[in-house]
Length: 191
Image (cartoon, rainbow, N blue to C red):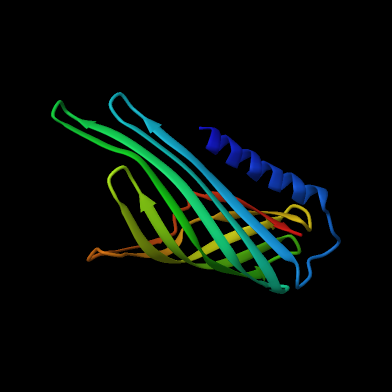
């Protein structure tokens, strides 16, 4: 729990830093920071599920509309499900760590609003109480970006295409998801 609180405080500090460093315009050669956080939970009489995740990225603005960079991700999943009196699913504590590359292409709609195509490649390691698995993932995520100031912006993600290949397994996971009922919010800073 302390680790989660520290990550939340670091995320909030990142946002405050961006507000404090206001600039007149965005220029090539600048450092770009991006991040998002996920907290989710579900609890019924017999079932409990909780998810905590944080994603951070640092990039370099190649030109006005293109950013390339490195991203890291951490997630913690816990699920307990009871089916009748006989079967209990308890996955314990599952942790996921990922590192990879990303790029963003901005298509300006207005001076503050842009459509963003974000591509990423990540190497993922998942560990639970029993074993560890590794995989790689490729994704293409459409976003809407609103620049609150020239330094601070907000991204709204509403799905995307995701492909994941799990090593030591004979299957792959993929999804094409344009779900407007599940919108993710992220923050980005131009320094």
